[in-house]
Length: 351
Image (tube, rainbow, N blue to C red; front, side, top):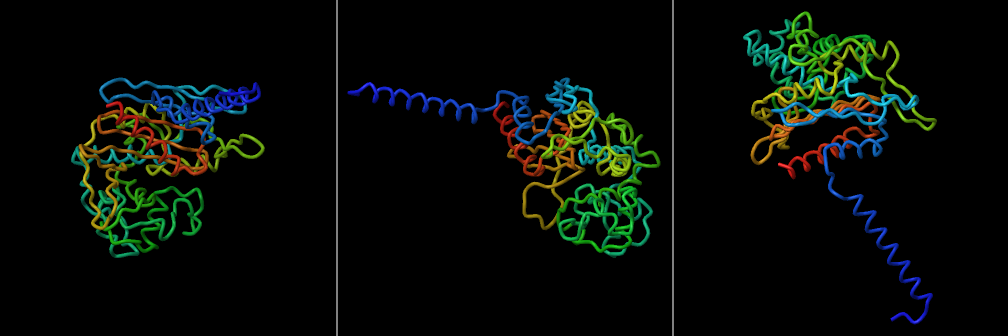
């Protein structure tokens, strides 16, 4: 077929190159074998030095796995019991504490928050009828995409960064109009969630600890950012740590992956959407992002602040996955979507 040695060598070289390309792409696009494979590949893709994963079915003990390093400068291995700043993963924990209080007959979450928290008259009269349950579902009328997020810009309200999220929320209540009529539209709102703080009583941390082994003060692992000159520790100053703690029930908790898994793996009710004008099928309820499926629904939440990225997933079969990272992706929302999609498809394939 080939009349010269040169032709035969070219053919052989071409075959080897083609085989290499096939192997490369097959490896790149092969289905992950485990949840651990998904997390392990996520880290280098998003320049994150370390993470802790807790996962497993709700009727068993979780498997806890540490990845990478807790300190990329000292190359310190990550440990499974490292505490992390939880950011907005605090929200479903706080929601569970409020629901437990309702089950004990201490509060009625369908009553207006103005009555439950003894708030002054609102700037926007429509806010007087906003219920605590609407705030848990992010349908209270606040929309940071229309106005702004006061939790991340307290100076625009005449407050400094030491102001707690509860104080910021009360200031918003008295000085800003709502962005939507309550109950009409879902719009994720940190400040709306912060209005719920007083419903947990004088000792907020104690109320949270009744549903999860977390804290609002105390040690947490370092958070990192990869810059052109290498890894840099972020959010490490006393002021930064004070601001993070001040996020309270909207994002101030500290805990381990196992503590979050224990809370998230407990039985959950079937949630129903409440906003009257939402176009999407997914919605928020009781601090969770709810994703309807053909035969049920699964729940997620994620938190992201500079140097912090936290995720929790509870699938409809009870499989629960928590991954806490010590750095944030450049685009945390799209990173969460990719992680969610990968875990969801893996869970669906393995049911």
